[in-house]
Image 1 (tube, rainbow, N blue to C red):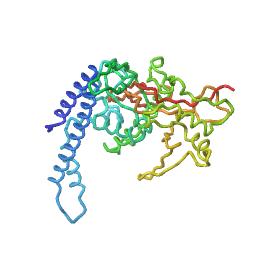
Image 2 (tube, rainbow, N blue to C red; image 1 turned 45 degrees about the horizontal axis):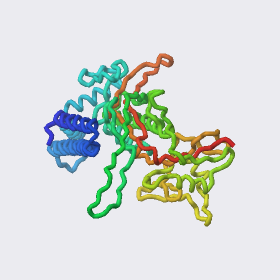
Image 3 (cartoon, rainbow, N blue to C red; image 1 turned 90 degrees about the vertical axis):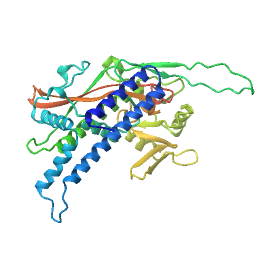
Image 4 (spheres, rainbow, N blue to C red; image 1 turned 90 degrees about the horizontal axis):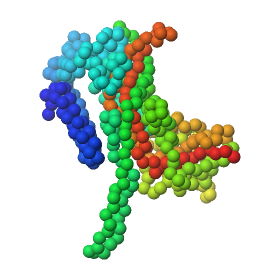
Length: 402
């Protein structure tokens, strides 16, 4: 299937170009199928590279009752590295030296995208490391992992459906009027997400694996925090950032108000559930953990039954719900208190898969010196935009003036 990394990369670029063309033409089902092909190709190449590495390791390993010598161990490690495409290993090592020692990146590994200002970006993070960063972001981000991710180029207008057709009963040979599918669109821009990351490693003793593990943890955690904040509260083009869910106006009748100085009650939760349209069963509650633990745990219905429940999954992690609806803890809304300011949304319901986050799947890094402290700083840069493409599941619980 693959000759080497360049062959894999060429196949991947072809699939991405085809996916972009399908999205531009509004063929969203075919676009989704093409994206699935990209993911399968990535998975196949990972398995291919691992198999090659395992085979080379087996060829060079020698069965021995004694503890493996350092020389033999070095030979196995070298054979594994050699089995991976040399250009990829060279890129990863060059990137490590750039970040830790300030060595200039070879030209073939420099960022050449004219959209990203060249003076802002020093080096493109290698594909292997980037894949691990994305995987880590998925695992640590409770909100990021649930939204829909797309990879359109900035400036592309993506069609979205704003209404659903309805079926009509008719006679055996009867007909019904044709229904026009109402569609809207959303245009993604280039918004630059910039975060400073710390890489505090002893340069003289660092290995490639230790360096990559550290940089992956630093970048993924910093970027997830910034992206999730924008998903909830981003103000949009006015401040060069994605448009957050709470920036949108909830549909009529889907804003539940609590008079300032009062606390939420069982009736509040029932009103919010009643306001959520049918068909959005996968919508979740989002609120701060403090709000859930202080205001809803222990709350009972009219029959004395608790409305908040905690269960433990097979992974040993607790899950929380209100009246059977999952609760996702969110640090980007304020905790409720009787003194919270008016016109504040402290909890809301939303189907997170209806938020579309668009990225360029590319993270770059630049080193610079903080002139105030003379510290060597490293900043990671990614192009991101996002917007809720369907707000019909948005139900806000808001404190209003008395």
